[in-house]
Length: 341
Image (tube, rainbow, N blue to C red; front, side, top):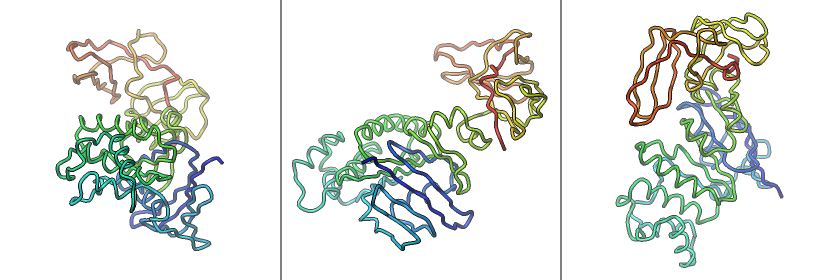
């Protein structure tokens, strides 16, 4: 039988009304959005920690929540694993004791040993959480969740409190840990890189409402709306005036540009990702000058800010320290994103 997780919930919150509706058939779903947009509230509703005002949550034939039929399974009955931001390990229990909780009473010690080994916790069995690194704590929390065989794993900003080096390490570890997981996973994040790396499908939330959903690559490549473009990392966004079917005037950059798709009247903005510019000759299509630009050297790229406000990122090697900004750069019409307000 095909697996299916259905979530359609509404809840009145202080700042806005949460209204989330999606179906997940496989893999990992990302919920991307700014802080305070309703991401964690959605996870807590699925886990049963918070009750929606209205709606429906089910996994296959098991109904977790149904406001019409007054169904509301307790969290313990939902078989959902929740990886909290702080991991929620029991401070007075050792690593093996924390993991064993997931196995329940009368557990098989050989099974516990297998889980300890699978999550690379060998040699740490007798340590307490305070004696572990952030990465080790995360592995213990994930091992405890996996021990009882959840149908759904919920990841709530799992890397939010970590420094950059540790984040990179743990991202790889988590990818490997989830690779063999046969159920569903949902990751809440405000980091577009995490969403892109982990998630097969993506939902973008803004003030409690779903403003985009679909295949992760498709949402990034064709964000459709201004706020979706911003949240997926588009640095250059401008209001436009439509000149004809394939030409626009950028009101913020003072440029006239050709686009690759026929313009419809509901297109109000265009977006250009910062890496999509290239060197040009003066008479090239969509070329413009770089007079008055400034540049900043980063370890692996140059950040060039043009006088009209456009931002260009140009890749470099760590040992390269010189870069002459060309007199003209251009943008391929295919790389101009058409956006609605």
